[in-house]
Image 1 (tube, one colour):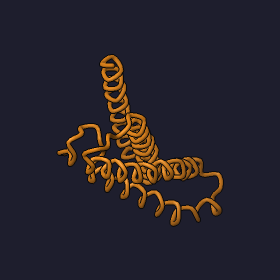
Image 2 (image 1 turned 180 degrees about the vertical axis):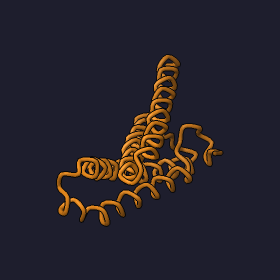
Image 3 (image 1 turned 120 degrees about the horizontal axis):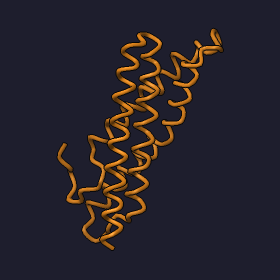
Length: 145
């Protein structure tokens, strides 16, 4: 993915579109699968998946708003995006991906345990790798000051 803006740490339109897709997957699962909770209130996997979608939605929304704001900052040569906004966008992106993808994995696990475990394992690995990279980048930026 090639960044749209000259600032390498800023979110791109593609990332915002991915979050919009995750938002719609989470909402559609909440609306269509949510009715199954009343029919089977003991299905812990379903309740956990729905809870993760509920947790992800506000972070996805905030990330989409921050992404838009950062792109507007980038279009103005006089304004610099504050590091706190970039960090908040990164945190929202990480929480959003982690909760949204894990919720989707749990929904898949209800269909096929093998597919769910494979997807969940790869999602956990990717989340750990992304978090490690974020922390290393943050540490390098802190020592630069």
